[in-house]
Length: 221
Image (cartoon, rainbow, N blue to C red; front, side, top):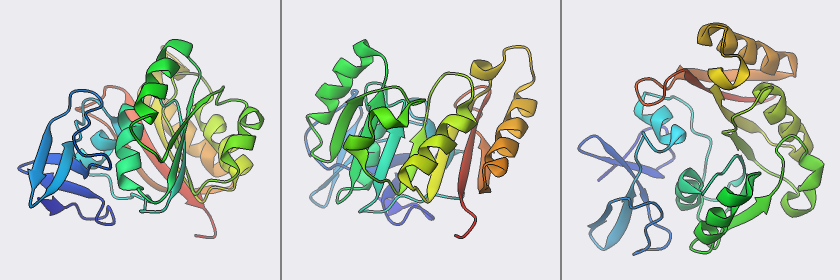
């Protein structure tokens, strides 16, 4: 098991597969494979089940997560990717915002296995609605299927003083008639207009169709 470059020693690789060191050994979240190496348990991180894993697998160059990062995760769904983020940030906190009540019930169960995960039933377009739970964040990670994806994450970046943002832009959620390339360019342009600088942008092909990960940060970084 070898640490993946650019991930601060928090993501590992073995024979082309990615892993995170399990925060709660013996517990699976979505049926993932568990591997024990020299007494340490690792969870396989499937790039076809997680856009953040897809980003790394596709060659992503920027990974701002550290052991103590406070992460605001917008669109956490049932907590599949968020549980790996919790592994990556064992001394930090992952605030998991989900709007759909059915998925939120599953998210609550997932958070019960990770002491550094907090489930929040909320609307990502209304950060004031969960500000009392979050307080501040170092990183905002977003995976929501709706319009105005760039503005939603920028609003949350501003609300919580985050230094870094990562957004998995879904082209078909913005406009089913426009080309994905034009939608990605528009999202990047809007993030710049909001006062941030683009650090990396990368298609998530072949793992996700018509998706791009955009990593950005404050201009002062």
